Each structure stands twice: as C-alpha cells, then as structure tokens.
Image (cartoon, rainbow, N blue to C red; front, top):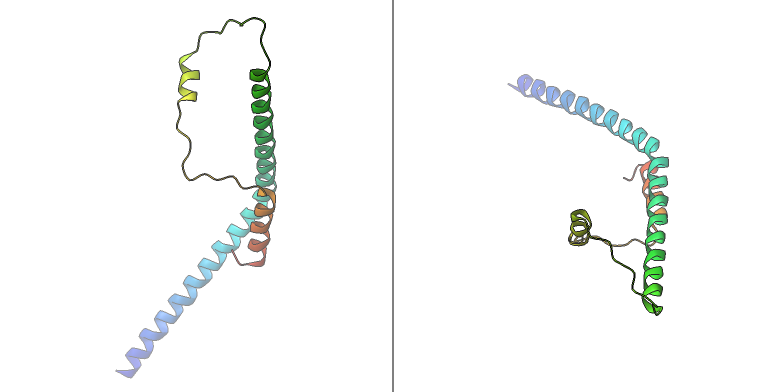
Length: 117
C-alpha cells in the first residue's frame, strides 16, 4: 500500500515538474515577444502623443476662429451621413488620459525584463 502511494506521489511530482517546465518555456517566449514589440509600442505611444497635440492645436484654432469677428458668413457644405455619425458617436467610458505614457510603457518593459510582470 505504501509503495502505491509513493508511486502516485512520484507521478504527480513528475507531472508538476513537467507542467512547470512547459509554463517556463511559454513565459520565456512571451518575454521575447514583448521585447520585440517594445519599439513598435513605443512608436505607437509617440504617435498617440503627437495626435493628441494635433487635436489640441486644432481645438485652439477652432476657438480662435470662433472668437474672431467674421465679415461674411461662409457657406457651409452639406453634411455627409458619415460626418453626422462621427459627431454623434458616444465617448468611450472608462478611458482616462495618462500624461506620461512613455514612462508608463518603459516601466512596464523594465519590470518585464526583471521578471516581475
């Protein structure tokens, strides 16, 4: 009876070690993939920052145009259904602005390299 229990424990131990080895290999592959994606994600973050800056400039330009007195009212082009749909789209809920995205992304990759992620 004791021999049977020892054999079951040994089998479970081998299965656990095998599974841990498999998980470790997958984690190593994930870290390598994250390392390969780091430049692309960094570039995406910079592009988002540039687009946010452009939107802010467009808003300030629109405010400035509204503040200037107009001598004549320009004709407004007819709105397309797409323009109407874009304006009436609901704002994303739960989204928040992160002022230092580059630092946030860099800290993520640093912690992933150290094995904390």
